[in-house]
Each structure stands twice: as C-alpha cells, then as structure tokens.
Length: 168
Image (cartoon, rainbow, N blue to C red):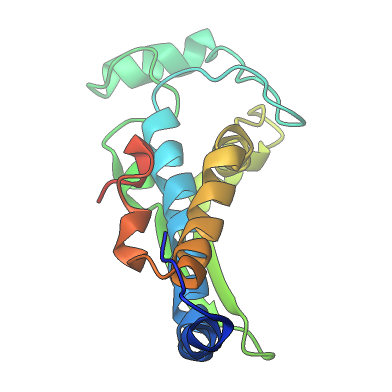
C-alpha cells in the first residue's frame, strides 16, 4: 500500500485517482462477467446441484440418452453435444445511459435459453444463474479489487492473480 508523507500528497494522489476510477470500475465489471461465463462453460456436461434459488439439474430422460448415443454423442453429458452451446457463452460490455459500466455474461444461442429456463418437455437446467450464485464472493472481489487498488495506488493489473479464477 502506498504511504503519504502529508495530507497534501494524499490529496494530489486522490486527484489523480478520480480520473482512473472509471477505468478501474470498467475492469471490475468486465472481470465479474467473465467469471460467470467461465463457470457456465465449465458446468455444461456435468449435473449441477441446487444452489440458492436455482434448481438442481434433473437426470436426462432415457429417450434423450438414447438419441444422444445414436447421434454419436456421449450418453449423459447434459447440455454438451458438439460444444456449440458452451462456446456461444461470452461477455458483452457497454456504458449505460448514466455513464455507468455494464457487462453481461450470456449467449445468443436459443438453445441455452431453453436449457436455462426449461420448456414444456424439458426441465430447467440453470447455467448462468447458478454460475453467478456459486461465484458471488469471487465476483464481488473481482469488481471491487481494481477500484481498491486504484485508490491505494497499486497497479490495477493486480486484479489478476488475486484468485486463481481471475487469471487470464
């Protein structure tokens, strides 16, 4: 942590920090969304237990298992066939109307929407929501870390390496 000799040097530091806080916030928001995306990609293909309000994944139906095998896929890897749905998960960032930084982990694959929320024939298997819930503490750390480092006079690049899931 940076130390200051007097209040004037601290105030000069804080004047410089103000200009950097927006960038630090953007890094933190993006890192938080990337944690969700990484976890969601890792979940597909493995049954998930209930976490918070997100239901545990039901066993695949026998019909579905048989169909998967006929198509050349493993019998029992829910949500994972050729990897296209998994690979569609990513992060998008934007600035809100008030200038705030926004990031979202998601997919434009309609199959993931049906997988996440369920259909009339398929129970829900929450991927993104469960991932965010499971990684909540790490997401908070990722979002706050760059801001705290900026205020403390530490390099914002320290945001990676704080936790193994934040490594690039």
